[in-house]
Image 1 (cartoon, rainbow, N blue to C red):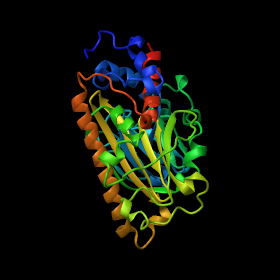
Image 2: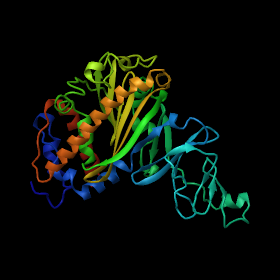
Image 3: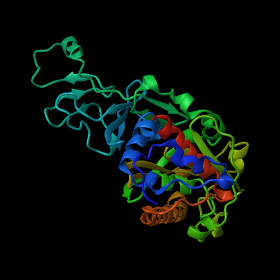
Image 4: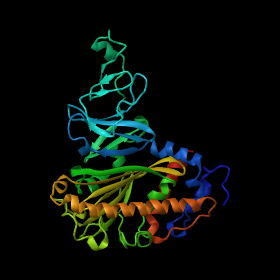
Length: 383
């Protein structure tokens, strides 16, 4: 199927807009074209609220961690007032990184280039070359670290890298996710124990689509997941998801699921009976189970390359158990296997897409159909 001259012509996507039973999947250029990718960045990623990390990763004043999101270096630090702030990790003098370490604790923030120094609240305190300036004169320069709009909800830190004036508030963006999923699963208790980041040679949408259907699990995850029946909870705001009801953890291999950690204390309702597999749009996949929480965050580097951030977390009470190191190995083994299997199939799928003809959506892929139409809404409405 040849790529048309104007890939943003809405009539090209009429087949995907049909009811799922008659619909066709998105055309190949949606997964390979750089102009489409740039439109996605402008309409979906820059206006969105993105997950940055867990508040428990910065429990005390001066605790910090760094990350790169949408190719921007960010610095997350808890101030002496115990407020979590997010700054652009860039000195206001000449733009060098203020903090290079991945994580740590500090009493102040010093750029190594010319030793411009900031408080952990981001206030410029010392500027070599401007020794004659009083504190008020330094403040008058307007050279404090640049704050990034951010917020903490149920222990999850979110940041916004677009124009706040034209984007929804964090609470409006999340809709009923907090009340329906995060709060019942007590995400504020979770502490990250492993994190990693890498780049895949595949389009980000392929990885999000695979998260939202279970048809592939008995084929790709035959030994790690097996069949996993799901239902679709009602969602408001910018998230969609599926729910798997099971008395046992979904985070272990099928034969080991009764030998995991106890459930988090105090869970009620659906949170006590199963796991939510949620996409906080556009690309943050978060699994909240009775005993563990993990995430796979997909951020596109280009049309055909995706930066993936993976993290595993447990309640603090679980981490304090004497058997945590031993039992957690079984979780890591199974979670790593599933992630690697999804990594493989998305890269494998990408290799066959260019020049392919659209396919179809089977019943188990109805959430994928919904997701793909949401993407069309964002990209084509900006025309």
